[in-house]
Image (cartoon, rainbow, N blue to C red):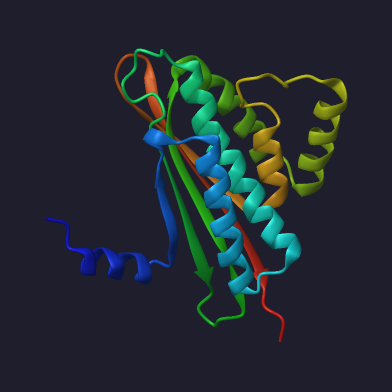
Amino acid sequence: MIDFEELEHIITEDRVVFVVYGKWMTQALIAGLAEGLEKDIEDSNLGMSAATNVLTIFIELSQNILNYAKARSLEDENKNEGVIVVQRLYSENDDEEGYAIYSQNIVADQDQSKISEKLDLIATLDQAGIKKKYRELRRSGKDTHDKGGGLGFFEIAKRCESIDHSFVPLSDGKSFFRFKATITRRKRK
């Protein structure tokens, strides 16, 4: 039996706003969760710009779960499998606040190489470089496609302080793709 008191303690202690197990992820679920996240952000006093960034990143990462699932075989019984965790952040001296958004989903090896290429490029750029590259790609139409992995990572990178990612190999030419975006803001005194 699940110990709900222990689960509540973990969630409260780690300031988890919510966890989404995406085996049944749908557009309607993403919209409903975004609405709940928006209400939590209003309570956090994060500010409009940072709040928009948190919501945009949440939606982009949720879309990645859906898009990469659609690219995989429909015979795969775990076709929408993915996880999103949204966590509230506070600094030690309580002068900063923000959110960390984590995602994990399964990607095929050919998608892994495309994702890695984009994220490796982003890692070499500062914020001005990310914005410049994003504008160039939007104007050119390059890297826009119906399956994701295009401009979305640039969109995320330009809206947060840091991103981190890793791949954990599975079997049959697939890997877990793990991603973290962190958005922080100094509190007004």
